[in-house]
Amino acid sequence: MASALRKFPFSVQILLGLVLGVALGFLARANDVAWLTSTLHTVGGLFVQLLKLAVPPLVFTAIVVSVVSLRGVANAARLALKTLLWFGITALISVAIGIGLGLLTNPGKGVTLDLAGATAPKKTGSWTDFLTGIVPTNPVGAFVEGNVLQIVFLALVIGAAALLIGEAAEPFVTLNRSVLAIVQKALWWVIRLAPIGTLGLIGNAVASYGWDLLAPLAKFTTAVYVGCAIVLFVVYPLVLVTAGRLNPVRFFAGAWPAIELAFVSRSSVGTMPVTQRSVERLGVPREYASFAVPFGATTKMDGCAAIYPALAAIFVAQVFGVHLGVTDYLLIAFVSVVGSAATAGLTGAIVMLTLTLSTLGLPLAGAGLLLAIDPILDMMRTATNVAGQALVPTVVAAREGTLDRAAYDSAGKRDLVDAPEREQLTPVAA
Image 1 (tube, rainbow, N blue to C red):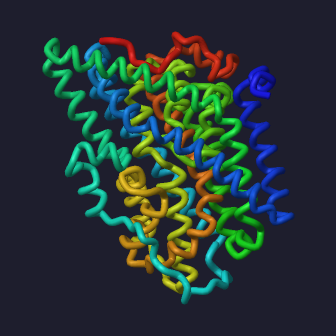
Image 2: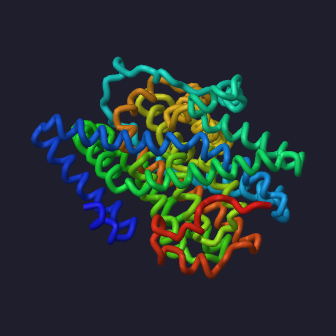
Image 3: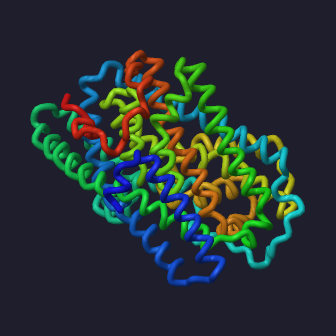
């Protein structure tokens, strides 16, 4: 079966896994087949675990090597600032769309839920958590706990130190290059299992979450999906055309494998290797992509940190009968643009939501009302996150004149996973 699947492009393999997973999920739910639901849960969970297993060494070594390699990149500081600027611009547009949809659809009005049973999530976010969460108290603990934001901080500091030291740090940099190459090779073996992982993840979602659970929150769920779709297929193409003078069709052809994998895995960081390869094949210079993509995977989250908290805050306010004014909407925008790193530094979009709710003074128990359907929402949110993480480096490279336009125009014509070995993600030596 594996050899038969290899005849299809990677994106088609993912689609086949998606279709089969939906069918098996419906079968398990309709006939109450507990063993099938359990099997789908185990298969999907193992795939995500394997992806996340490689994340700490991958992020650390990739950033260390890429920072050192920036010595050969002209205007590296300007590139970093422009990347941050475009992260902020697209996040601001996304949160504006989220607020607009919330005001248009009123997702919390008329919703009847058991408010007495609503409790605040165990893990909540605050500005103190965000600030203290950046710097680890124990560097080993950051790796053990898989705290990506802290790992990024350590890697940036160590990479910058190695860059300044120069020749004396070269053995350390060489070691990091070797570890990075080994981790990437092992990780691509895992990524080849994505069609099977897709089957398990989607199948388990369908078997576990039926319409009975979604019905009371159907308007809110639809608003989240519509908001993400507007950002994905309207805002991003407009940014590509106006800011980068690029064909959006070619962008989606190149980035689609990463977007697909993000949808089923619900992990921006777990998808990062595919995102980086997609960005490089879109013509973004490898030295810049190896910095921008890991950085974006921890801080660039238009779905989880912009659209979702905006809509969810309006939903919670309406359910609890709290009026939101212009100042509140401005606060939502501020939190979304500035505080999105908390999503990576702690635990998922729920933490970003509780950060938003606490800033607005809304009941944190409101986040508990949405926990049941969070996995369904997280699929579309994460797909939007990853698309944005691929978009910004592509646009910045285009505006800087460093984008390989020929590579961009041919993106998607060759299969991503079965690319030649020379297309590994490893940044070139400085």
